[in-house]
Image (cartoon, rainbow, N blue to C red):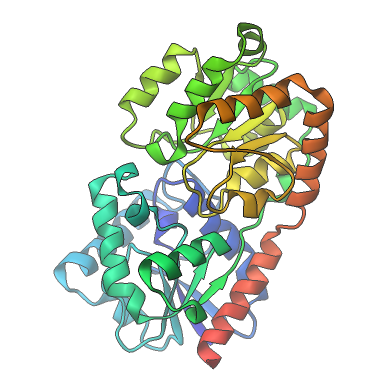
Length: 369
């Protein structure tokens, strides 16, 4: 079996989705024998992951992205040419005109461009609408990172549940163990306080930073002084007002953190909060739990599926609910310790090896089905 895998996200500036593809391919390629996997568009090898830009050289990136754009908007059939002898083309929404004579598969990370369009730029919504209307009906098989996403695709988009396989994400091993010197280096590099409340994610409406700030403001001045709010991640979109609100509470914005120092950023936190309105999976949850950081998160979509009993949950629309959960963790040392230990055990259940094994089985099922 030859799999043509759309690795276009590796050419982009991205975090969560790009991390998924890089980590999956790193673990999938070595176990695929006797099958073969080639990376579209003509990518060679898997260089180290770079969230702030392409994983490949500047010229190679420009040529390959130019090819994808040409295929999408000029009718040049580059995917068809490269998939001539492929048994399956695993594509992302970046490919608008996949081959017509090759079985297609894909992964839908979350359906929020349709379920929560107000949280996305209009271009994202249009892109996803096209993918759902034009590409999804042609898919031989479809993966989702959680049962929550599968349920939403079935309920809201009418996708046949028999075509969908849930394949959970994993977590990298270095999030479990970080040496003190690395934690110190992260504090020095990003000017971090000794203790802090941490949020990791794009600064955009779906992440619910407005209600996080409001909840944080309800904490006592003493708690806020001892635990400043640190926000890490991409600039995102639709965030002008959010940035003002974060500034009003003195939040420390790190922007992207170097991947080598990201585990240390978690290890230095007193509490991790992810109050999103929707997560298709929520990789930062696993990363925080692996680092033994107590977690407060939302009681919707995939977040309870990922965190299980290893987190405190809050209604993302209820500011007082979020504030109460945060205060409990910051005030109750025994609770914080218990959540941290439970989170670490929970995170051990999610490995990239298992993700790769399940993904291989998914491809074999599609071709054999």
